[in-house]
Length: 459
Ligand code: NAD
Image 1 (cartoon, rainbow, N blue to C red):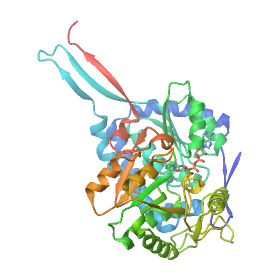
Image 2 (cartoon, rainbow, N blue to C red; image 1 turned 60 degrees about the horizontal axis):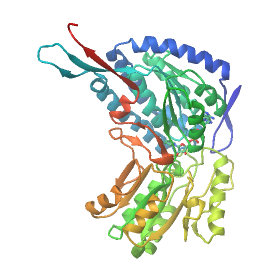
Image 3 (tube, protein in one colour; image 1 turned 90 degrees about the horizontal axis):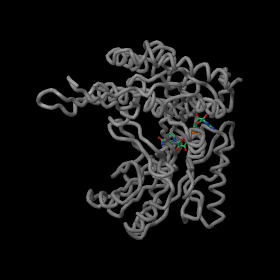
Image 4 (cartoon, rainbow, N blue to C red; image 1 turned 135 degrees about the horizontal axis):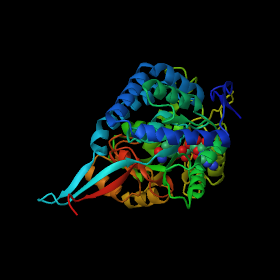
């Protein structure tokens, strides 16, 4: 099988890669089983050293890696560089925390030494990591870095839209001294992912859409394997009337349009206190009209192409549905007439929750803004979704933000910021946004199985 890699900015094919079929996936899975034995027996200090070398290679080669990412995903170069820079901070966090999280713990001991109770953290074994394309270094490293530190072997399937990056990740691990059977890339699209899920692995860690997440959950049902799903969102922001309108508009617009709206935590719905709605919309549209659209290899580009051609149709359907139901277009609304996958930054008002644009993940540069009469109505609107990844509130008052955010169903909540992820905090979703978590100290524990030790020095 062959996988074609196309540049989303031009449509040109930039690489043809050999893809895995069911037989080669099974062979890789067997290799990873051997790798897991060897790697788990490697002392943690040596595993950490290998990860440090990985960090140093990623740092010294970051410009070339950023360019590969931009070529295959279409992410504007400045944003690809940011992702590589952010990777280093994640590695630092995991490397610093792993020894204490993974250390064996004495939880009870009787004074005469007759009974001791301890907890050790065993690796799961072989984990399958099926990943998304939008932040391959981030969402990948949230899984494979703590998995490797904890002593697991990883079968890593990058998205078919980020396979060149996936192969670079594998190369860097091999050069860092991680055995090639402990980190094994699996290349291909959905069919290859399906074959990977069918292997006798000990954990399945997936990042992607809710539709694929459901398919994987069904395929894994009945098997006693750990399953984590990091899925999509329809993340809301609510802007209160006490904000600095220009600053809030710039910040929320960045949350909606950064990476051309293709972050899992992109702002996807905006509610604004009715008393400032018109002024906020005016500032927001001015901000969006100022975005530079163009060649993602140009350092000053802010809006690039969509990674996947098929998403153009999804966005067009959402815009047409909204307009047919009475929405008003204040910017954009159509694909850009040029080769590649381009869609204009699009702003809609007079929207409501009967419209797909306010209910279904857009995952592109399209946003709807709606007035809210008061905080109570804003909370109701924010919670009117099957998703729950992130939610943000912009207000001058910390207590007001706390009151509102405490009532919002989301894994991460933001006051006066949005579209932000920290390695120190758990990353998780409510409802259709997924199950399980990555990042934080708990995101290292997630790749271990606690073993309970009951020890008596005599019987
Ligand atoms: P996707 O679901 O199309 O693909 C994700 C991965 O699943 C790819 O590697 C793909 O090849 C694989 N796959 C497809 N069908 C499969 C099957 N039947 N069995 C096994 N694997 C299969 O998602 P995408 O387009 O790569 O990513 C975009 C989505 O990911 C958005 O919904 C976004 O919100 C979400 N996302 C979530 C997070 C998070 O942390 N919650 C992070 C990034 C992206």
